[in-house]
Length: 47
Image (cartoon, rainbow, N blue to C red; front, side):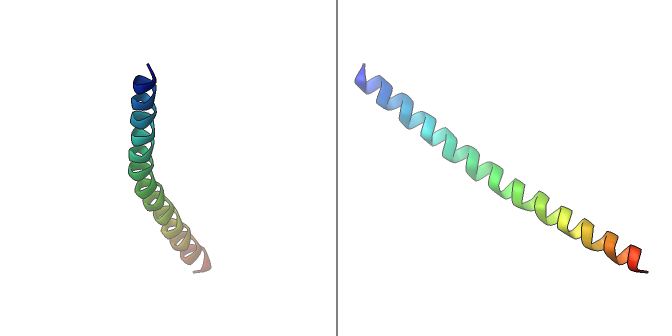
């Protein structure tokens, strides 16, 4: 039983790390895009 719980914890932590690695780049990319869009909007309004 202890081995099974250890395996479950290991799998859960592994999945969590994978999810973070997958979501972080997407989060950074969307942030960059929104920053670029804000810059374009500010340039358009200044003209």
